[in-house]
Image (tube, rainbow, N blue to C red; front, side, top):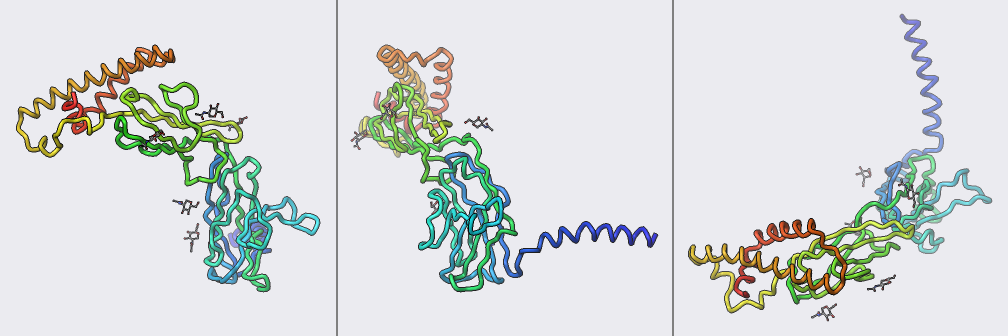
Length: 326
Ligand SMILES: *[C@@H]1O[C@H](CO)[C@@H](O)[C@H](O)[C@H]1NC(C)=O
Ligand SMILES: *[C@@H]1O[C@H](CO)[C@@H](O)[C@H](O)[C@H]1NC(C)=O
Ligand SMILES: *[C@@H]1O[C@H](CO)[C@@H](O)[C@H](O)[C@H]1NC(C)=O
Ligand SMILES: *[C@@H]1O[C@H](CO)[C@@H](O)[C@H](O)[C@H]1NC(C)=O
Ligand SMILES: *[C@@H]1O[C@H](CO)[C@@H](O)[C@H](O)[C@H]1NC(C)=O
């Protein structure tokens, strides 16, 4: 028994010792880094890699310098110098145009932000810290965790701002942005509208004057990266008649009145529903005659009617305006 125990302990030590030595060879007491080992980002989008570190047991410094470096296949040497991709050193080399050391090294923050990710950015990187140019507190965190970035194809959809209430005749501005707080990017943003042929707008914002003919039309924002990959997001427009069209009534009187008016509103609802659908029908008809786009199959018409009803039943106030306007 004793013999077996001893030998398994030795085997264990023989396995563990080299790992232990390898793990600590170039790590220095008082220096540590917390950063994810792998990070994914979609081509054209942005990512922030959270990172913090200690140097000489501290994470508070003054006017220190941080650097993110491309991890070389072999150790850096005079003939194979390390490449800086991002730095807080304003006097040093600039690094890559889409890499930013967004953390403040003075507070032990080494967070790295990559905007407009490219397939070439898929590499491994390491952090370098210098308390000052003359201080001995400096280190390449090569023998620590190093983030490897992978850049995948674009599949995430753009985000269209909430249109809120869309009223005929009142200008509406919509914006379309890539997901993930990503402004500096080469993504091309374009808009389409179901009753406009071709590209509606070539910009991240669009301002338009909605008309009742836009009711139940769809608006699509598409983003395209430099590799030609496109994703898109579509919203359906619900356009209401302008409140200024109503005769001099206001919403407060409606709340206080008796049941005959409520019955009136119910009948009004049905009337407004029919009128809006009739109006949509004529808009569609006129539109098809004009453009011959042919985008109104019998199926899509049925769907339109259902969603119109859903939307209207939740919008009593707007209906009331419609009713009074008729
Ligand atoms: C450092 O990073 C780790 C892991 O990302 C996190 O748990 C920790 O709160 C961070 N510490 C500071 C001081 O930011
Ligand atoms: C990414 O896109 C390229 C073409 O741009 C294609 O060849 C490749 O198969 C795609 N990869 C994945 C994982 O879909
Ligand atoms: C978005 O990015 C900006 C800088 O580009 C930054 O100041 C801001 O804190 C970020 N917001 C979020 C929610 O990450
Ligand atoms: C948008 O740009 C495309 C080509 O990039 C062009 O064909 C189209 O006319 C432009 N449309 C508008 C509305 O500016
Ligand atoms: C409404 O939008 C249109 C189209 O962009 C613009 O020509 C017009 O000046 C705008 N009107 C107002 C009142 O902002």
